[in-house]
Image 1 (cartoon, rainbow, N blue to C red):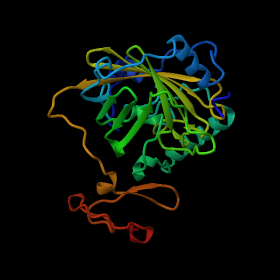
Image 2: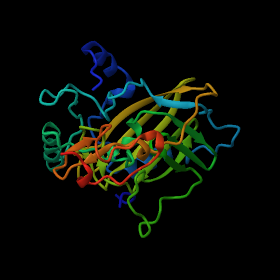
Image 3: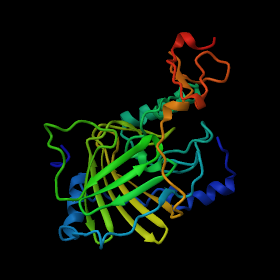
Image 4: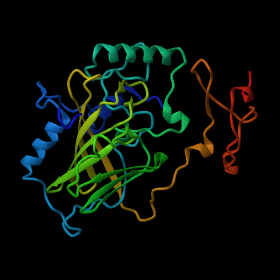
Length: 307
């Protein structure tokens, strides 16, 4: 185990986005400093002298509603580099993939080009982690002395980071989870998080896959009164030739009238999957279409779809 080891944007706007920390790949270290994510996490904890023991009075103020910075739909990637010439609107990944996962990624791109691309969010499944970091919509970050809740409006995904000194779930009881199992500690005003026991998934639409062996180290810190900086290192031996480092930023709105809502994706989901893997959107008048305002969710099968 680890503990032991579109909207189309102008070229000018894209260039501007790439300069924004939340959309740019963090500079990678020339050498992998740590063999495993656990090694990195424990090194950071040792550097913090075991961590800061906060009270409610000393915790940083993370109140408000947060969103990825800047909030521009269809501009979210785990990392961004130049466009793929073979698939406009999709960026080349900066991850150094193993041969198997590199081949799988190229096949994924070919499937998208053939109209067979499938994304689990289209089927109202959770984004999962670490993709959770990239998704739009509203969030709340709620620190307490013993745990911090990182809550996302989309599909109501809430991460619980335990900072009360407990370790990870014992191996005998651990199962892969959408958001994994997260523990952490405070280094003054920085929350350091170690996450493991994750379901396999993809980093974003048109991006590579990650495996069940993925684990991460994050560092969360407010860098000014309105901005949260998140640094993450992803470790995934089956998929990555070396750890993948990235940064994201979130901006806060403290207007009390802005709130995080409960989101049920199934209420208005019109996406179905054909037997060949193609995603199809039902339109008004199609068999199986339902009016979202009625909150009726009829069963949609292949037999109910139009020819």
